[in-house]
Image (cartoon, rainbow, N blue to C red; front, side):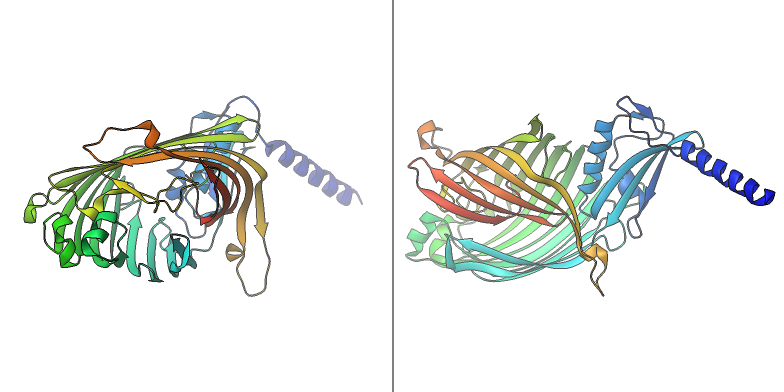
Length: 439
């Protein structure tokens, strides 16, 4: 009997010691980190996660910083859930980053309407193979049919050499593009399509957690009807273009897919032609975004987008176009073109459901395939933008504007669906259904 009581006593002491030694340490003040532990990652390499953290062993961190790092790790798009907890073990403070890996190979349906017409729909499938060696590499292939049929294969590796900061990517593809340039349509006398073939290779360098530079070399082949040859860069029906792009990006946002705090700045200068075949022109792209929590869970974001084309002879297919991939909500299908466009957006978001970790346990299916982070947000927005040629002055009265409201459904790490209703200056409305994020 004494042995039983002694055993129970020792067991009780052991539990009490363990409980006092493993204490949750998420105070309001800073806490020094003695060790970092990664758990839950059966495929992803530890360094892929560690390189996203803005703290290291020996640093002191706050609860706000813990939440920021949780969102940065989630922004990799590799996990359905990320948790960061600090606890004490053997008098050491350990930051434990626990992840639940998502499914890494999956098809996504593709549907895009042109000019709000079913007859001008592009449809197909996108196949993603992510993180196949645990290094956050992405292999993407897609095939679309209908309007603008296209085929593309691309690869991206954010860590070309383990322990180094080099990135690498390549891509090639083909598209039969339906012309959307107004002047070339008039010159041809009717609508037309043209062949576009490209190949590119990119090398980048990650300066630090927030700053990246990249250089891309590309070759493009554009084959247009003979009638519109005067509007190409070489003044012939075929343009063969060698180009080089130098870009810089600053990004200190928390959750990159749907940010509530931080700034994104991007600038790229593209030189086309190098004088070969008489082709020499340039494209400057600038994108600046800022995100901020206003009060409580209400967040606001603002964006400024600028595209400028200039040089010896800018071809019709390289002009800046609003009413296509970039548009003013309320004027989604109003096509405008010029050497340049300016687009600005302001948006506020409020969560009806901020973060719901959805998980289905189904037979024969892994939980990585049936788990996702769900969010549901109300949003209100205002957009304004214009296009203009280099020989024109910028006029405020030429801006198109629109405003409206909507609901965004987040299905992370995969994608989002937006349902929005927008009004233009004449209070004419349009309903918008889009996959992806507004910005």
